[in-house]
Image (tube, rainbow, N blue to C red; front, top):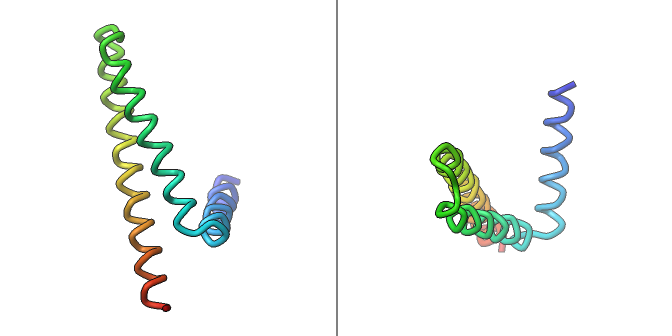
Length: 83
């Protein structure tokens, strides 16, 4: 069942990327940047145990942002080659 969910999510991701092109990746990237900024802003208000969670969350969002940038670059490169 998990494999089917993962495959469905991948198909949906690909369909959205085809339909909306670079805008899809840009919106995802903007959302991640917004979340990173929000988390960084919260650091001053977190208890000591929350800081560790906050650092882990920002690291995760950073990796996801890096992935999105790579996906966008790959999409733009494919587009440039095909034109």
